[in-house]
Image (tube, one colour):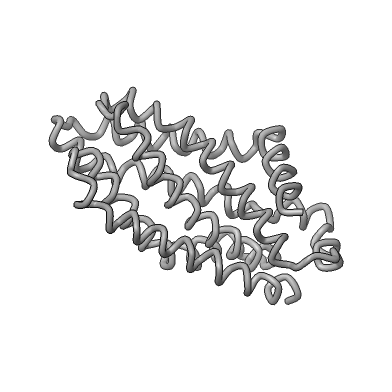
Length: 220
């Protein structure tokens, strides 16, 4: 069940291209604004780029996560979710996995643009940046999927979704920015390993809590 829901959502997003095009153009605007606004030397670039990258990744992801359950609402499928003879947590995990995969695909497409526009010399550090992106994306997807289900049927969902999500996502953004800055500066792994551990701990907490409370949200 989990893999079918994730695969269905991923195919739907890639075929419709609605979300991916809006996310891509938002990120492109962010990159262009920052690239033309700042003239940075190598040291300034290493200090500022982690924040700029995670502003683009985070807010681009929020655009997609906010629409996670809209297709089911528009096609009157939420009732079918409630009648499925499987634990409701499995539905959450399927949606969460689809969102996380989609966000990672978008981030992998966007990251070369940061290298190109800001002349970053980080190709040899890409595996560690991918690990940090994976940890941060799991946390954002876990929270985003939960709050997308919570707000999908209310009128002011476009306003309520980021208001609910962003305060809880602050530790994820801080951990991702600090760990990425450590990688960009070429620091030894022990100096920023605690930030990666923080991301993993928040991932476990958010996924576990969201899995257990999703049934109450779906029934409500």
